[in-house]
Image 1 (cartoon, rainbow over the protein chains, first blue to last red):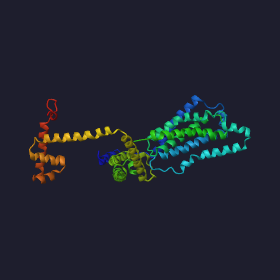
Image 2 (cartoon, rainbow over the protein chains, first blue to last red; image 1 turned 90 degrees about the horizontal axis):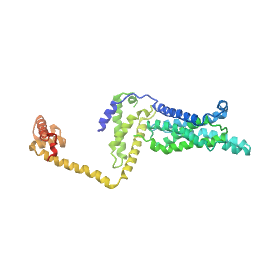
Image 3 (tube, helix red, strand yellow; image 1 turned 45 degrees about the vertical axis):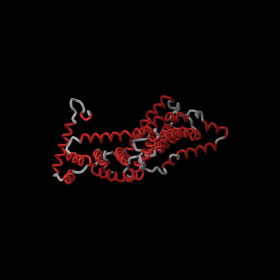
Image 4 (cartoon, chains in turn orange, cyan; image 1 turned 90 degrees about the vertical axis):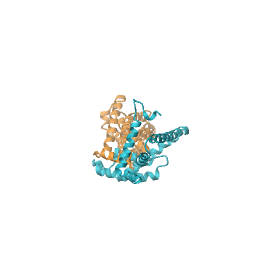
Amino acid sequence: MKTDDLIQSLAAEAAPVKPGAVGRRIAAGLGMGVVVSVAVMLAWLGPRGDISTALMTPMFWMKFGYAAATGLIAAVLLSRLSRPGVRVGALAALVAAPFALVALMAAIRMANAPPESQHALLMGSSYTHCPWRILLIGLPILAGAVWAVRGLAPTQLLPAGLAAGACSGGIGAAVYSIACGETAAPFLAIWYTLGMMLLAALGALIGPRLLRWR
Amino acid sequence: MLAGLAGEAGPYRRLLDELSGLLRAYYARRAPSGIDAEDLVQETLIAVHTRRATYDAGQPFTAWAYAIARYKLIDALRRSRLHLRAPAEEADALFVRPAAEAAMAARDLEQVMSKLTPRTQALIRDVKITGLSTREAAEKHGMSESAVKVAVHRGLKALGQEYAPQDGKEGVDED
C-alpha cells in the first residue's frame, strides 16, 4: 500500500478521543486486579482476627499507608512510562520516599529497644511467609497492570515492567496488610519491602516480553 | 494533533502528511540495509493513529511521535536479528524463486505479445509496461491520442479473447 493511501484511510478513521484515556485504562486494569487480589486474600488468609481494633491503631495505618503510597507513586510512574516521549525524571526517586520514611522509623525503634527484643522486632512471627504472600496477592494486580499498559504505548519496556511490578507490589502489600498481624516498623521495613521488590523484579523480568506492542 | 484527537479529518490528514515526511528523513538515516524505511514510516503512522490516545495535549507532539519512531526502529532491528539467524540455504531459496518466476513471466509475455501486430505490440509495451502516458505514446508513434487508446484497448481485448479460459481450462497454461 502506498503511504499516501494509508494516510488517506487513517485520516478517514479520525474519531474523537476522550482525554484522560491513559489514566482511565490504568485505573481499570489496577482496579480489576485489586478486586481479584482482595478476593484471594479473604479466601486464603482472611482479615486478621482483631481487625476492628487494629483499624484504630496507627501501626495498622502505617503499614497500609507505606504499601499503598509506594503503589500509588509507582502507578503514576507507570502512567508516564505508558506514554511515548514522556520523561520520568525525579518521580522515579520518589517511589523510594515512603521506604526512606519507614526505614527511619525502624532505625529509631531499634535504637530505643532493649537488645533482647531487637530480634523479635526484625523477624516478627511471620517473616518466612510475608514476602511470598505479598508476591502471590500482588500477582493479579500485576496481571491487570500488564493488560492496561499493553494497550497503551510503552516505549521503554524494562522500566515500564519494573514500574508495573513495583505498583502491584505496593498495592498487593496494602491488601495483605489487612490480613497481617505484625506491628513493628523494623519488620515492615525489611519484609514488606522484600515482598514488593519480588514483584518489581518479576515485572522487570516479564516487561520486555509481555509489554511489547505492534 | 489536537484537531486529530477531536476527530477533524482535514487537519489530521495534513498532520500525518507532514509527519510522514519527517519520518522518512528519520528512517532514511537510521534504517540499516535490509530494512525497508518506507515500511517503518507506514508502521509508525499506523501506531501514531491507533495509539493517539496516549498523546497528552501538554506534551510536544514531535517528542511523542519520535519516541514511537524510535520504538518501531528498535523493534524492527530486533526482529531482523532473529531473521538473520535463519540458515543460509533457506535464505537462498527465498531469493531465487521470485527471480525465476519473473524470468518465466517475461518469457510468457513475449510469447503472448507475438500474436499481435508489431505496432500494437509497441503501443502496449509503451503504455502498459514502460509506463508512458497516452499522450507521450501518441507523439512517439505519430498518432492521435484517441487512436492510441483504441489500439491499446483492442490489442488487450484480442489477447483476452485469445487466452480466455475455455471449457474450464486455462488457455495460457496449455502450451
